[in-house]
Length: 446
Image (cartoon, rainbow, N blue to C red; front, side):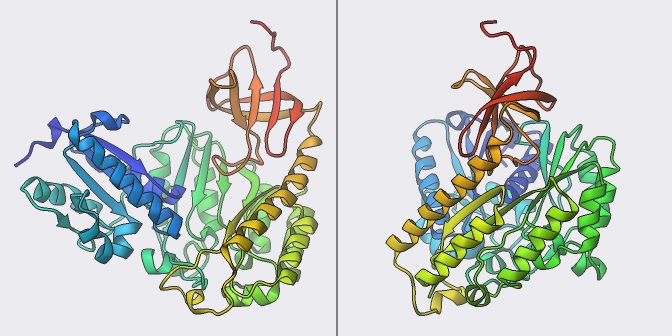
């Protein structure tokens, strides 16, 4: 038997923040077994690569990372463990092809980690995909800055969007028991910002309790002393009701920010995507949110180049962006994914056209974003300090309308700042996505 306490474990987590939470739970399993963790790959003897497989580009990134990792086997590295979405969905293709990897685990197999690793040390490449229990894991090793963390409240998806592989990878929507989530959040320590994530947070509880329980879990989380604020990501438009709007408005611990993945605006394309709602309904929802919560920041994502998307459809989407004037947007070219309904659709849009349309949408949103940010020039803005940016020689943080990694930042000078604390920053400069400023008492040259 191998004494794994003598080994150093490193981990690379690819993909979304939901994947990050999975990675943190696996790290907790490793740590709880008395093993050593390292963030220096050159020192790791066991390297874990938690993969994403949502899009072709993410699969390419995962494969390249595995191949790159194998180069370290000439140094300290002994084993490469591949986990997550890539083996979960594509184990048939990857096990034989990716001989650089020694162990394969799926999304629900972390309880088999050491058993699989031991088998590999016994001299065989092993496939443990589908052997785990998938039981809820409450403990984590936080990999974000200590003052904010993600809380994954559910896995899988029932929405069946025609372009999306998630149901084929993660399965049906499964809510985690509320008491376990509350306990998990309570043991995260003092958290300035807790970010709720799932493929669809607004459907939380329906499968488990027979009714929506997002508001209830929000109330329970914001009642915790160690949780200072809560941010909502991935709220599907058809599930945002009056009760949720009121909770966001009236609960002082809920950040006035909401992420609503709309994906398109034109009714015909939305129907082909199997998305609920229409252009008119989406605009009405945006207006309703702003009427009830005047300062709310709204973020969304959009896909362009979906099969049969005409120039007229694209111009309609662009005009929607101009009319909606959302605070933050992400734009993606449609990726034709095997084993999805949209893969078989006729009228695939050329890649060159898709790339051009993405650039045009970003250009449109940049103008909107710049106008929105310019209103802060010369004014004070409350900003949470996230870190020091050594390249820019200043502190970097976020206002309430900026989520980590996906939105812009606030770069500021101060005589002193503490990670996770909030400061009043006088804004003196802006670009299309970021703000720049300083504290009122900042003395240049000191």
